[in-house]
Amino acid sequence: MEPLQYGFMQRSLIVAVLIGLLCAVVGTYLMVQRLALLGDAISHSVLPGLAIAFIIGANIFLGAFIAAMVSTVAIAVIKNRSPIKEDAAMGIVFSGFFALGVTLITGIQKANKIDLNHFLFGNILGVTPNEVRDTAILAAVALIIVFLLYKELLFYTFDPVGAQVAGLPVNQLNISLMLLISLTIVASMKAVGVILVLSMLITPGATAYLLVNRLHQVMILGAAIAIISSIVGIYLSYFYNLPSGPAIVLVVCTAFVLAFLFSPKSRVLGALVKHGR
Amino acid sequence: MQNTSPKFGLLLKTPQRMPINREFRDIHISHLGVQYHRQDALQDITCTIKAGRLTGIFGPNGAGKSTLIKAILGLVPMSMGSVLYDGRPLVDQLEKVAYVPQRSQIDWNYPATVWDVVMTGRVKKTGWLRSFSSMSRQIAMTALERVEMLKYTDRPIGELSGGQQQRVFLARALTQEPEIFCFDEPFVGIDHKTQGVLFNIFQELTDRGKIVLVVNHDLGQSINHFDDLILLNCQLIASGPRLHVLTETNLQRAYFTI
Image (cartoon, rainbow over all chains, first blue to last red; front, side, top):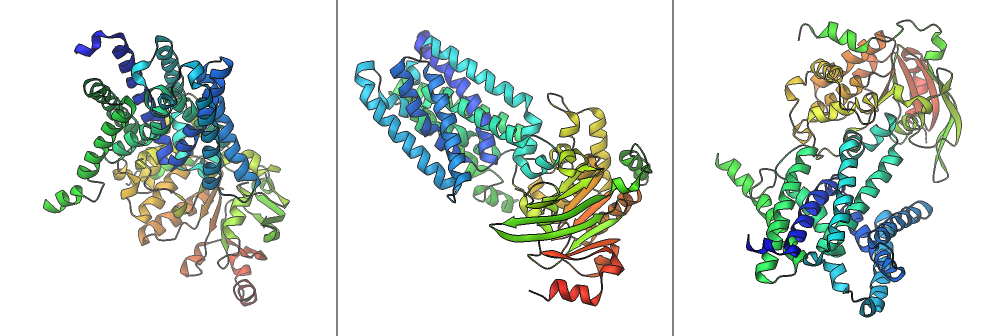
């Protein structure tokens, strides 16, 4: 409880809870569609948007979001207009954007008193009240979209062809999903950084998926796992002077390992327990 | 089980039992062509799929059977030709169609129960920003009962047998309350019981004037259940009533020519 008397700890805990909730819910869609790599691609691609926003003095969330959308479109264009497959297109686009971002930020970091490491790995203990507000708004928007489009997104992510034949606007649903994922990544930058955000998107949902069987259960349990991990990670970071982003990610991964060992769905200890009965 | 039939009748009731003009209620395919990588996958297909008849699309592997269904539904682009239903392009009225994909096209590890999958059949009818009505739930229950899957409602779809999976998708198609049913290889990897359930339901649907279109590659005994056949081998070999299509010459041309 003692750390809570500091404003920065209060702020970082609020952000951690919001990000945990948001990443787990939205990341579940990436996992069930086998699009984990796309999450990685988008998260690396936001970096030049951040840098440019800094240079021209615009809102960094906006800059990052625009970069995320541009990279998604670039991947789609390469895939659709050439024989290059989607995974190669992602590799090309995200490494190119990432390199541009690292170059730009290295160039401006001294003058602007910013640190490249904070973008790459997060600096949740340094969030400002304004950033708490922005994160809360982004999280609210994304969660409301998930709530309102829940049944359509379930149909589309489970059976896109069936959804198309049923007359659902599948292209628009796909764009909404990409939008959600970009919003989520942008909102999470401060907490875990662009490199580790993939862990927050995929691991909580994957952990929950080993334990429960329905999409909304995966989201809710995943969110609970992510929130608890985020809080534990921040406390570890505070007491042991660890970098906050990696601390959160390590706790999430520990939760996954436990679920993996004990879940009846994975063929490790679960199988032994079943045989033992 | 005994009282399922009347409920099921309710479920499948159409606004008009006897269409005013039968011609319009058929699917008219004319000069349909599909190209993959500049190669003709289907060439100049012209035929009619009749309402109230169980129609099978047959032909050897690679004959373009699935491609034909996908072209009819607008899932692959046609290079030429048209598909009309009710005097208008069918792709503009897909809400009247239920499509059951090949089982292999579905990710059965998706975190969903039988109930979740069947309810996707009610998504379009429910509309944006609304939750499922009690009528939708009732329709889904009735459909599950009809395919003998009611006691598996809460079962994760990954834990079902192939036949049970197929019956779940059949139940979903029923909850969509469509006028046209399209099945892609529904008999692959299923048990005897499921095959019986499928053919019984096909019969009920066609009795009610629905269009039931089934892609099948198996020329075994089950072919006798079909009323009409479309025999393909990249082009149309023959179409029409089963006995008219199943001639020695037609089968030779479909299965033993390059």
